[in-house]
Length: 394
Image (cartoon, rainbow, N blue to C red; front, side, top):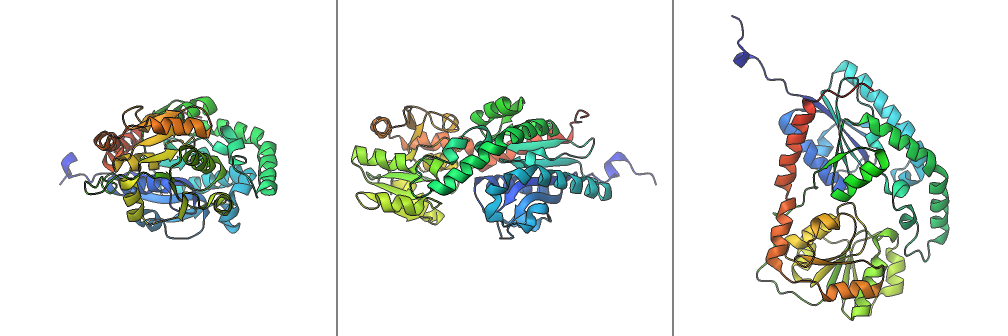
C-alpha cells in the first residue's frame, strides 16, 4: 500500500538554541525559557549553545536541554565581563561545534538570544538564523561610560581598569560585531529603542517583539491601599542610577524602598541608609508584588533596552516615573500611566513625580499589551516564518 500525503509522518523541525551565558535567571533567561518551550511544542529542540555555564539550575526547559559550552567553560563564569576579548574565539568555536553536530543530525533553524556576542554564531549553509536581540553589547556600543561611572565611590580602581580595558578592545570588537551581524537571517528586537540600536550598530532592520511579562501574576489588589513611598527595583549597579532615584526622593521629601542587590549595594547603604531610605535586598516575588500594589510610584531612572519592572509595576496598577529614553518609551504612556523626565537631576525627577498620574485601571490595561501570551503568539509566528525562509548565501 502506498502512503497518501495524509498518511505521511509530519516533519518536526529540529531547532538549535544559543544564548550568551547561563549564569543566573533574569529577563534574558526568561525570554530564552519561553522560546525553548515554544520550540519543544512545535519542533525538536537540539542543543543549547553558550559561552559560559556555571551549572546552576535556571528553569525547567533550559535545564532539560543538552548544553554545548565554549572553550571558556574552564574559566570562572563570574569573570566573564573581563573576558570580552575572547568572545569572538568562543563564538567561532561554538559555530564549528554546530557545524559538526549538524553533519551528524541536521537542524532546520538556529535561534539565538543575544545581548553580548552569541548572535555572531554562523549557522550551517542553507539554515536560517533567527536572533532575538536584547541589545547590541551595551558596554561597547552605547553606555560604556555608564557601565564604568555613575555612582563610583569605593570602586575607583576596578572601574578605572574596566574603563581602560573596554577602551582598548572596543574598536576591533565593534568591527567583529558588525561583520558577524551578517550571520543573522532575521533580527527581532525587544523594543523600538533596541531596533534603532540594531540599525545604528549593525546596519540591519529588526522587528519589535516585546519580552514576556507575567501579567497573570502581577495583578492589582483592590483591597490594597496606595501609600506614600516610592519604589526602586533593579540590580544595584552604577548605570542603573540608584543614586539618582534616592536623591530625587530626598529632594521630594518622601520615603523610598530600594529592592535589589549588586556590586555597589554596600556603598549605597553606607551613604544613604536611614533618612527615609530602606534597602530591602533581593526579595521573593510575592513581596515584590505587594510593594508594587502599595507604592505611590516606581522610579525608573536608568536607560533600559526594555525594562520589565516598569511593566510589572503597571500590571499591579502602579504608575512609573521614567527617563525619557530607551524601552520606557514603549511601555509608559505620558500622562496616563506615568511621567517622563529629561534632565539627569534630582529636581527633574521630583518634578516629574509631582505630575505623575494615578490611574490603576489605565496602568493595568497598558501592561496587558506585554503579556506572556502575546509574546508566545508573536514568537510562534516568527519561528514559523523563519522555518520557511532560505537565507541568502554569505
